[in-house]
View 1 (cartoon, rainbow, N blue to C red):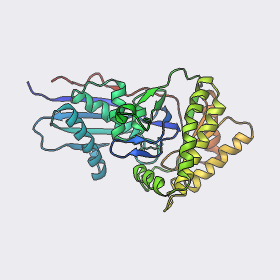
View 2 (view 1 turned 90 degrees about the vertical axis):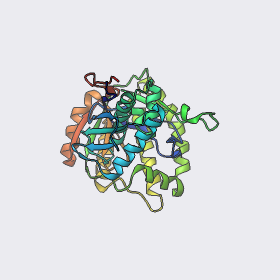
View 3 (view 1 turned 135 degrees about the horizontal axis):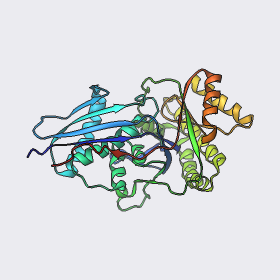
View 4 (view 1 turned 60 degrees about the horizontal axis):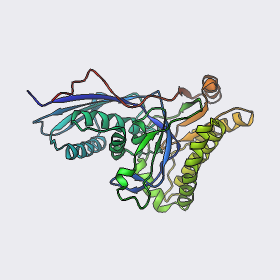
Length: 336
Ligand code: PMV
């Protein structure tokens, strides 16, 4: 019997309502503060991992083409971690398919590493519960820890004096959320971002005078956001989310040299969101490491809001609702 295994997994992107921006440990990908997100039901990533005994090196394809050197290096580093944990030195063939534009601040690394973690852990027979899987996904990309879960997810920062900070930093599904929310994504630009979030975080921490204050605010935003979600208070959720995102971007803009993920188009959409709100609308914006603006609103108003934003700005919009957790495809053969 040959000892091969293929596993296929799908995961969805998530958008943080309280952002993760800054690591306390680069190798272990431990965050300086906790974060909270909504997993989306759009733009899934599907990844297959085939463990190939005797193959001399890993192969990585993305959307049908060999992955760039930078992507392949990141995937191989992640597989090395899995080989080390499983005690199985086999190389693997990794094939990943995105429906989200890669590198444009629409969280392709979150869906990508959540899908890779689940497929690779299965192909290498690592026996992980969802907490273990989220800790593993975290090592590929911090925000991927949250895409292991559907709906709303909370990623814990380890206490400064935690004896095992790696074990203390995992995401979990947030139960008891009482808001019925949607996110309208305004798609401005799908070009890869000018600087990776990893490098941008490092530079922000090292040079932005605003970073310490934002970090303090974020630690307060997290319990306030949980309370607002549990209370079903979407206006409070939206206000906290928008302030937190604008604060994060202020830290980047004041880094040296400054990091500009937002463009004139992003600010145009932000102005429109503010104008709609001033006229009584229920909508709040959030932005990540890219120019696209995501607008939080009540689910039953999302289609109308998407139409309003498209009409006012001319940009394409897509409505996202809370999405499912990362999942294996049942047809894959995972036997030894
Ligand atoms: O997972 P990373 O390293 O790509 O970091 C993502 C950071 C933000 O998307 C900007 C915020 C977040 O919490 O998702």
